[in-house]
Image 1 (cartoon, helix red, strand yellow):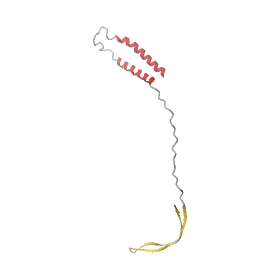
Image 2 (spheres, rainbow, N blue to C red):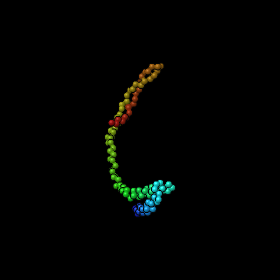
Image 3 (cartoon, rainbow, N blue to C red):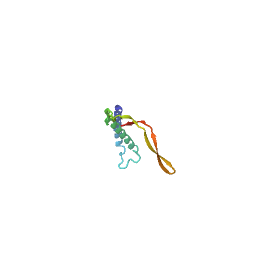
Image 4 (cartoon, rainbow, N blue to C red):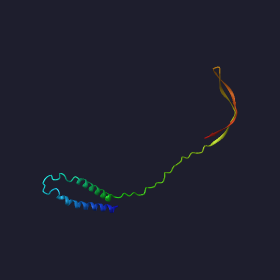
Length: 125
């Protein structure tokens, strides 16, 4: 790649050097004034393209190569799980008892007693 670029630069300099002496006296032989009325329309485009090519070649040669180091590897963050104490559960016997229950009769609320048998109930705290 560099050899090709250097070859292009040298070639454009040599061709540019050969073109300058031929054109130096072209429009001034016996004419003192505006002697370029039908000539030289392609010279701007050629010079522009040669300059652009030279810029691209020199830019490719002189631009420093970007070298990146290896990415830094970090350990993953430690995940702390909250520690909850295990619930303490205890089974307790609930004695039988009498409860009052509401009852609707003729638009009035009355209460009657019901015997609730004993049962086991689990309490966790």
